[in-house]
Image (cartoon, rainbow, N blue to C red; front, side):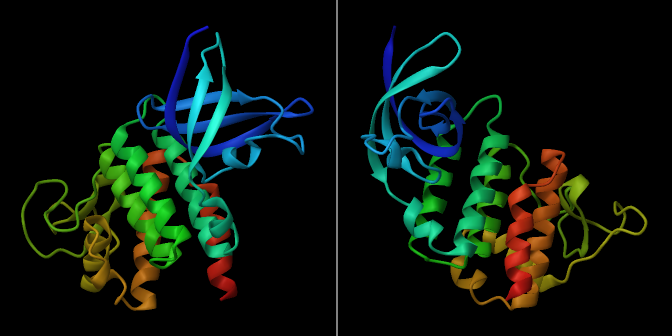
Length: 245
């Protein structure tokens, strides 16, 4: 059987039999890979901890007919422990890998891989707030998938201007002429924050008020739900954490 190696980030795992797992990974060069990791649930497994969600590893595979088999795994980024120690970071990371799994259903890309790895690294180092990091990741991931939102020009006719109508089905802000009747509106501060999260302007993003950040998150969640045809289940846990705070 052919052997190959690739850098991967672990998205999710499922139990298989008494000691094995099926590991779903987003790889650097081959897109999404599902492979069997044999014996990883045993106490003496050599690389079980390297194949947990949010971990980045250099993995060797045997190519199989239906599922490949993992034979080696070397850690490249041990982000799981730091992320799991903080509930907000854990739920944000869970939403990230869920989105990556869904967005790369048919094929992956190097850009999606690098974006996810960078976002998980940032979460593990607590560089920014978990929800801001998640919203920025989602907006960029959807842009890479071909669904870039517009927060400046009208997403329907392209006319430049300062608009407040926002329609997720049309891709973002729309001018008064293109806005359907009853379209919701967002204030200038929220639209500016969304633009900053999309472009990576963290100085601006971290200075946003809590209510502004909450409205931006609401738009991002709605945008994700529309394009994925169903919401991200992990977002519900993040909302519960925010309500407790």
